[in-house]
Image (tube, rainbow, N blue to C red; front, top):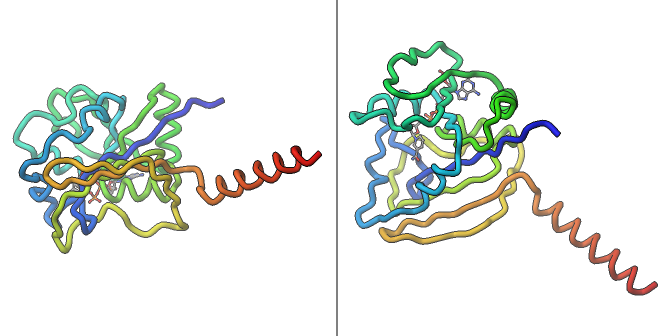
Length: 201
Ligand SMILES: NC(=O)c1ccc[n+]([C@@H]2O[C@H](COP(=O)([O-])OP(=O)(O)OC[C@H]3O[C@@H](n4cnc5c(N)ncnc54)[C@H](OP(=O)(O)O)[C@@H]3O)[C@@H](O)[C@H]2O)c1
Protein backbone atom coordinates (compact mmCIF):
# COMPACT_ATOMS: atom_id res chain seq x y z
CA UNK A 1 0.00 0.00 0.00
CA UNK A 2 1.40 3.49 -0.84
CA UNK A 3 2.28 5.69 2.15
CA UNK A 4 -0.71 7.55 3.57
CA UNK A 5 -0.93 11.18 4.66
CA UNK A 6 -3.83 12.31 6.80
CA UNK A 7 -4.93 15.90 6.17
CA UNK A 8 -6.72 18.13 8.67
CA UNK A 9 -8.21 21.59 8.73
CA UNK A 10 -8.39 23.43 12.06
CA UNK A 11 -9.60 26.99 11.76
CA UNK A 12 -11.66 29.75 13.31
CA UNK A 13 -14.39 31.61 11.46
CA UNK A 14 -17.07 34.21 12.07
CA UNK A 15 -20.59 32.79 12.26
CA UNK A 16 -21.08 34.06 8.68
CA UNK A 17 -18.15 31.90 7.60
CA UNK A 18 -15.18 34.23 7.16
CA UNK A 19 -11.57 33.40 8.03
CA UNK A 20 -10.44 37.02 7.88
CA UNK A 21 -11.61 40.49 6.94
CA UNK A 22 -11.10 41.65 3.34
CA UNK A 23 -7.81 43.28 4.44
CA UNK A 24 -6.66 39.96 5.97
CA UNK A 25 -6.95 41.04 9.60
CA UNK A 26 -8.69 38.68 12.01
CA UNK A 27 -9.09 40.67 15.22
CA UNK A 28 -12.68 39.34 15.42
CA UNK A 29 -11.35 35.89 16.34
CA UNK A 30 -10.08 37.20 19.68
CA UNK A 31 -13.17 36.46 21.68
CA UNK A 32 -13.33 37.89 25.22
CA UNK A 33 -13.43 35.09 27.75
CA UNK A 34 -12.53 32.34 25.27
CA UNK A 35 -10.27 29.62 26.66
CA UNK A 36 -8.34 26.77 25.04
CA UNK A 37 -10.33 24.84 22.46
CA UNK A 38 -8.12 22.02 21.27
CA UNK A 39 -5.54 23.77 19.14
CA UNK A 40 -2.60 22.51 21.23
CA UNK A 41 -3.73 18.89 20.84
CA UNK A 42 -4.22 19.41 17.10
CA UNK A 43 -0.76 21.02 16.79
CA UNK A 44 0.91 18.10 18.57
CA UNK A 45 -0.82 15.64 16.24
CA UNK A 46 0.52 17.10 12.98
CA UNK A 47 3.99 16.82 11.51
CA UNK A 48 3.75 19.24 8.57
CA UNK A 49 1.87 22.47 7.84
CA UNK A 50 0.65 23.30 4.32
CA UNK A 51 -0.34 26.94 3.85
CA UNK A 52 -1.36 29.11 0.92
CA UNK A 53 0.80 32.01 -0.19
CA UNK A 54 -1.63 34.59 1.17
CA UNK A 55 -1.62 33.04 4.64
CA UNK A 56 2.18 32.95 4.41
CA UNK A 57 2.24 36.69 3.68
CA UNK A 58 0.00 37.39 6.67
CA UNK A 59 2.11 35.23 9.02
CA UNK A 60 5.32 36.92 7.81
CA UNK A 61 3.80 40.23 8.87
CA UNK A 62 3.41 39.14 12.50
CA UNK A 63 5.63 41.08 14.85
CA UNK A 64 6.62 38.09 16.95
CA UNK A 65 8.83 35.13 15.93
CA UNK A 66 7.96 32.75 13.09
CA UNK A 67 4.61 31.37 14.17
CA UNK A 68 5.23 27.73 13.26
CA UNK A 69 8.43 27.19 15.27
CA UNK A 70 10.48 24.27 13.94
CA UNK A 71 7.51 22.42 12.44
CA UNK A 72 8.09 21.89 8.70
CA UNK A 73 5.98 24.31 6.64
CA UNK A 74 5.13 24.01 2.96
CA UNK A 75 4.09 27.26 1.28
CA UNK A 76 1.99 26.73 -1.81
CA UNK A 77 2.42 29.22 -4.63
CA UNK A 78 2.74 29.15 -8.38
CA UNK A 79 5.25 32.00 -8.13
CA UNK A 80 8.72 31.80 -6.62
CA UNK A 81 8.62 32.91 -2.98
CA UNK A 82 11.51 34.46 -1.10
CA UNK A 83 11.75 32.02 1.80
CA UNK A 84 14.80 33.77 3.24
CA UNK A 85 12.28 36.10 4.88
CA UNK A 86 11.60 33.29 7.37
CA UNK A 87 14.01 33.36 10.27
CA UNK A 88 14.50 30.17 12.28
CA UNK A 89 11.84 28.16 10.48
CA UNK A 90 11.80 25.05 8.31
CA UNK A 91 10.08 26.20 5.13
CA UNK A 92 9.88 25.11 1.54
CA UNK A 93 7.72 25.94 -1.43
CA UNK A 94 5.62 23.57 -3.50
CA UNK A 95 2.98 23.98 -6.18
CA UNK A 96 0.73 21.76 -8.20
CA UNK A 97 -2.39 19.72 -7.80
CA UNK A 98 -3.31 18.85 -4.21
CA UNK A 99 -2.98 15.16 -5.11
CA UNK A 100 0.65 15.66 -6.18
CA UNK A 101 1.42 17.60 -3.02
CA UNK A 102 -0.15 14.94 -0.80
CA UNK A 103 1.68 12.17 -2.68
CA UNK A 104 5.05 13.91 -2.35
CA UNK A 105 4.63 14.59 1.36
CA UNK A 106 3.47 11.03 2.00
CA UNK A 107 6.47 9.66 0.09
CA UNK A 108 8.75 11.71 2.31
CA UNK A 109 7.27 10.07 5.39
CA UNK A 110 4.97 12.78 6.71
CA UNK A 111 1.90 11.35 8.41
CA UNK A 112 -0.44 14.21 9.21
CA UNK A 113 -0.69 17.59 7.45
CA UNK A 114 -2.43 20.72 8.73
CA UNK A 115 -3.86 22.43 5.65
CA UNK A 116 -4.54 26.15 6.11
CA UNK A 117 -5.71 29.17 4.10
CA UNK A 118 -9.11 29.66 2.44
CA UNK A 119 -8.29 29.03 -1.22
CA UNK A 120 -5.90 26.28 -0.24
CA UNK A 121 -8.48 24.46 1.88
CA UNK A 122 -11.06 24.88 -0.89
CA UNK A 123 -8.72 23.31 -3.46
CA UNK A 124 -7.94 20.36 -1.21
CA UNK A 125 -11.65 19.89 -0.42
CA UNK A 126 -12.54 20.04 -4.11
CA UNK A 127 -9.92 17.37 -4.78
CA UNK A 128 -11.38 15.17 -2.03
CA UNK A 129 -8.15 15.44 -0.04
CA UNK A 130 -9.22 16.67 3.37
CA UNK A 131 -9.82 13.89 5.90
CA UNK A 132 -10.79 15.86 8.97
CA UNK A 133 -12.13 19.32 9.56
CA UNK A 134 -12.47 21.20 12.85
CA UNK A 135 -14.19 24.56 12.45
CA UNK A 136 -14.62 26.87 15.44
CA UNK A 137 -17.28 29.54 15.01
CA UNK A 138 -16.83 32.72 17.00
CA UNK A 139 -19.99 34.60 17.86
CA UNK A 140 -19.76 37.53 15.47
CA UNK A 141 -20.97 38.47 11.99
CA UNK A 142 -18.51 40.49 9.93
CA UNK A 143 -20.50 40.71 6.72
CA UNK A 144 -17.65 40.35 4.25
CA UNK A 145 -14.19 38.85 4.17
CA UNK A 146 -12.11 35.87 3.09
CA UNK A 147 -14.44 32.86 3.04
CA UNK A 148 -13.52 29.45 4.39
CA UNK A 149 -15.69 27.67 1.84
CA UNK A 150 -16.33 28.24 -1.86
CA UNK A 151 -17.65 26.44 -4.91
CA UNK A 152 -17.33 22.66 -5.00
CA UNK A 153 -17.46 20.47 -8.10
CA UNK A 154 -19.93 18.14 -6.36
CA UNK A 155 -21.44 17.75 -2.91
CA UNK A 156 -18.87 17.04 -0.22
CA UNK A 157 -20.53 14.85 2.38
CA UNK A 158 -19.35 15.34 5.93
CA UNK A 159 -19.59 12.91 8.81
CA UNK A 160 -20.34 14.80 11.98
CA UNK A 161 -18.08 13.64 14.82
CA UNK A 162 -18.88 16.16 17.54
CA UNK A 163 -19.96 19.68 18.32
CA UNK A 164 -18.48 21.27 21.41
CA UNK A 165 -19.13 24.61 23.03
CA UNK A 166 -16.49 26.64 24.81
CA UNK A 167 -16.45 29.69 27.01
CA UNK A 168 -16.84 32.95 25.13
CA UNK A 169 -19.56 31.40 22.95
CA UNK A 170 -17.25 29.42 20.68
CA UNK A 171 -18.98 26.54 18.89
CA UNK A 172 -16.68 23.95 17.42
CA UNK A 173 -17.75 21.25 15.03
CA UNK A 174 -15.60 18.36 13.97
CA UNK A 175 -16.20 16.39 10.79
CA UNK A 176 -14.63 13.52 8.94
CA UNK A 177 -14.73 13.57 5.19
CA UNK A 178 -14.24 10.93 2.62
CA UNK A 179 -16.90 8.38 3.25
CA UNK A 180 -20.27 9.16 1.76
CA UNK A 181 -22.92 8.72 4.48
CA UNK A 182 -25.48 7.71 1.87
CA UNK A 183 -23.20 4.92 0.68
CA UNK A 184 -22.66 3.87 4.31
CA UNK A 185 -26.43 3.87 4.84
CA UNK A 186 -26.87 1.73 1.72
CA UNK A 187 -24.11 -0.61 2.93
CA UNK A 188 -25.79 -0.88 6.36
CA UNK A 189 -29.11 -1.58 4.65
CA UNK A 190 -27.51 -4.27 2.51
CA UNK A 191 -25.85 -5.85 5.57
CA UNK A 192 -29.17 -5.86 7.48
CA UNK A 193 -31.00 -7.49 4.52
CA UNK A 194 -28.32 -10.14 4.17
CA UNK A 195 -28.42 -11.03 7.91
CA UNK A 196 -32.26 -11.20 7.77
CA UNK A 197 -31.96 -13.56 4.79
CA UNK A 198 -29.42 -15.69 6.70
CA UNK A 199 -31.75 -15.86 9.75
CA UNK A 200 -34.64 -17.04 7.52
CA UNK A 201 -32.55 -19.91 6.06
N1 LIG B 1 -9.22 32.18 10.74
C1 LIG B 1 -8.29 31.26 10.55
O1 LIG B 1 -8.24 30.25 11.28
C2 LIG B 1 -7.36 31.41 9.39
C3 LIG B 1 -6.54 30.34 9.03
C4 LIG B 1 -5.71 30.48 7.93
C5 LIG B 1 -5.71 31.65 7.20
N2 LIG B 1 -6.52 32.66 7.58
C6 LIG B 1 -6.57 33.90 6.79
O2 LIG B 1 -7.03 33.58 5.48
C7 LIG B 1 -6.45 34.49 4.56
C8 LIG B 1 -5.74 33.74 3.45
O3 LIG B 1 -6.64 32.88 2.79
P1 LIG B 1 -6.86 33.03 1.21
O4 LIG B 1 -8.05 32.23 0.84
O5 LIG B 1 -6.83 34.47 0.87
O6 LIG B 1 -5.53 32.39 0.59
P2 LIG B 1 -4.52 31.17 0.89
O7 LIG B 1 -5.20 29.89 0.73
O8 LIG B 1 -3.75 31.44 2.13
O9 LIG B 1 -3.50 31.41 -0.32
C9 LIG B 1 -3.95 31.28 -1.65
C10 LIG B 1 -2.77 31.18 -2.56
O10 LIG B 1 -2.05 29.99 -2.27
C11 LIG B 1 -1.47 29.48 -3.47
N3 LIG B 1 -1.94 28.11 -3.69
C12 LIG B 1 -2.97 27.46 -3.05
N4 LIG B 1 -3.03 26.19 -3.48
C13 LIG B 1 -2.03 26.04 -4.39
C14 LIG B 1 -1.56 24.94 -5.14
N5 LIG B 1 -2.14 23.72 -5.07
N6 LIG B 1 -0.49 25.13 -5.96
C15 LIG B 1 0.11 26.37 -6.06
N7 LIG B 1 -0.28 27.42 -5.34
C16 LIG B 1 -1.34 27.26 -4.52
C17 LIG B 1 -1.84 30.45 -4.58
O11 LIG B 1 -0.76 31.39 -4.56
P3 LIG B 1 -0.19 32.14 -5.87
O12 LIG B 1 -1.25 33.13 -6.22
O13 LIG B 1 1.07 32.76 -5.39
O14 LIG B 1 0.01 31.09 -6.92
C18 LIG B 1 -3.12 31.07 -4.02
O15 LIG B 1 -3.39 32.33 -4.59
C19 LIG B 1 -5.48 35.33 5.35
O16 LIG B 1 -6.10 36.55 5.71
C20 LIG B 1 -5.22 34.52 6.60
O17 LIG B 1 -4.84 35.31 7.69
C21 LIG B 1 -7.34 32.58 8.66
